[in-house]
Each structure stands twice: as C-alpha cells, then as structure tokens.
Image 1: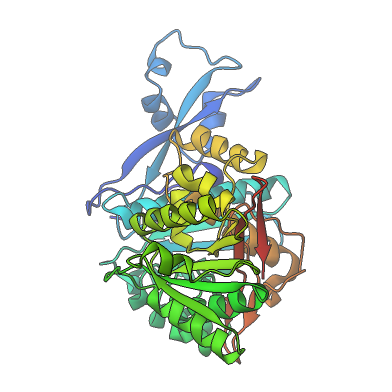
Image 2: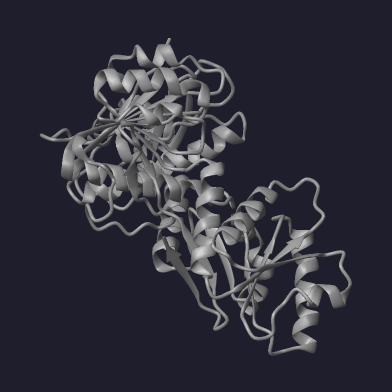
Length: 443
C-alpha cells in the first residue's frame, strides 16, 4: 500500500531506507505561536492529532498545556519506494506544480546526494513562498532499479508543469516522450546521455557532456590567453583522461599559428626550465588533474622562481582542482591560477553561509562536503526555473536577462540546440589572483 500525506511543502523530507514499503518517520521543529492549539497545528500540517501527540510524548500527559514559544516536533511521514509525497503550498491561481523524479533514498551515495539536492529544492520553494510564488511539489523515488512506468501512471505526474529528473540515462527516452505528450518542461539536472535533447523542445539540460566541455574549454582557453606562451607538461599519469584536453588545446593553438612548448616531469631541470619564455607570460597546463602530479609540478615551478624570479608563470587547471583548495590555495594565488568549472561558490560569503545555516536548522545536519554542494545545486536550479515559470509560463527559455538571477553556485544560461531542447552554456574560469582575491570570469 502506498502511504500518502499532504503536508506544508517546506517541511517535507523524502527519506526512504532500503526497499521496504513501510513508511519511515522523522520530524521537524515547530515554534508554538500565540493562540495555537494542538488541533490547529496538526490540521495545518495535514496530520492527525494522534500523530502529533505520538511525536511529542509530553502531550499525552493529563495536565499538558500548549504554550507560546514551546518547540514541538512535527512528524514527517514518507512513502515507500514506489510511492510519492505531495508537499502542498496554499493553492492560488497560477500556482506551479513541480515534480521531482530522482533516487530519493538512503541506500547508496546516489540516493543520499539526491536527497540533499531535493532538500535544496524545498529550500528554494520556501524562498519563493515569501515572494508570493505558490508551488506544489510532487516527489517520486526513481531509483536505479525503479519502475518509471508506475510513476508516470500516477495522475499527478501528468499535471506537473515542470519535472526535475532523471539521474539515470535509461529513463530518458520514456520520460522525454511523456513530457512531450503532456506539454511538461523537463529539467535534466546532471550529466547523462540525453540524445532526446536534440529533438524535444521541452527539455532543459543543465550540464554539458564531457566531450563538449573539452572542446569549448580548449577553444576559450586558447582565445583568453592569446598573449601567453603555453607550456604543456606530460605528467606520466597512465590513468589520466585529461590527455584529450591537452591534445585538443594543442590543435587549437596550431590552428591559430601559436607556438607552445612540451615538457615532462621526468625532464632534467635544464630541459624543464627551457620550456619557459623569459620575455612573455607562460601558462602551464598539465595532462592530469591528480594531486600528486600537481605537487610535483609546483616543486619544479618553485625551483624556477627561486633561480629566475622574473619569469612570469600562470597555471590553467581542471575542475577537480577545486577539491584541493584547502591545501593549495596559497599556491593557486602564487601562480595566478585559472580553474575552468561549471560551478563555483565561496562558502564564506554571507549568502552561502546563510543557506548552510538554514540547511542545518531545517534538516539537523550539515551539507555533505562534496563538490558541487548538492543542496546548493537544488536550490539554484529550482529558484531559476520556478521563477522563470512564474514570470513567463511555459514559454520560459532560460536565456540571459529574463530576470535578475544571482546564483549561489550554479550559473545558468540556456541556448536552444537546433529545433530541439535547451542546453546550459554557462561556464567560467575561477581565477585565484596573486593579490589573494578570487574572481569568476564568465563566458
């Protein structure tokens, strides 16, 4: 049996454990206001008085009195693996129906990450509520071994204005057909194979495919650093996949008639230093993103700077280098480092810190220390598309300038792919400047 509860959308958690059909219960805090009653609080959250009392054992005492300022627990009940939750805001004319079809469970890392992403979506809905935007959220657990057809058979799936999902490529074909037939916008939040993008105008894909990123990053790198001498370093990493980038970059430079140098971490000091020019800024590019080879390169660069302080050296890295910032930020600043990425957030900014604090207050734990932060991704994605739908309806195309959008982590700028859907073309260089400031260069 599928259990269903209609709750205030902000407090819904969809936390499924294992493959049991039993409902899992958790709770969120509620601060009692003046004149509130047990019945009124239970009714407002769509639960029974008995469920509220069971979550707060003190209420069962004969002399219990509800007082202003008390913190009580509101039980949140999630459905089974094939079920779904409706988290409903006050229904007004023009309200938006959002569907989330992702693996929402605690069985493996995919599920845990998507639960955090979903929580970010709910936080965005709470922000929009304060702006007067009404959103109904329907969440289905579409796990790797899930039954998409049973979800699509749910009448509420057809009523959605926007669906976020899936995480797995195998569901794209059926879900693409479904949204096209029912005129629903589909946001594919992560990088999966989605050939339907090229024929279905209802699809938004947020992350570009790796081969597309390689080509565009190499082209933009060659253009942006037009006054630099490139030094490509072979790091001897047989496991690296970054050789495709350095070979594409070299091809771009050759097409532009630009000279570059090749060297290796195994080269002698004399030969390594010989790859650098003294009268022109040098840009160092490795053919691996691994930390050990980065450290070896920094050691070689330090030796050059010690003996020839006038040599100008910058570095161009990989998105993975953002994971090394804790230990390498000083070196990144020292070598004027540019890191290409489709996301970035300074977690110490007031905006990011406020969202981290909200997340911990609502869900009683910190965000996972992952890159990107999945809760921030869910927050940015939901805020962007729900605001767009609210303002433009289903004509929203995600193009630049449609409304004021200040991303916390994930910049979004969509372009249509032929006669098909829309793909995010936003990308940036995260620049660690020698003056110890950080800037993002959007392109």
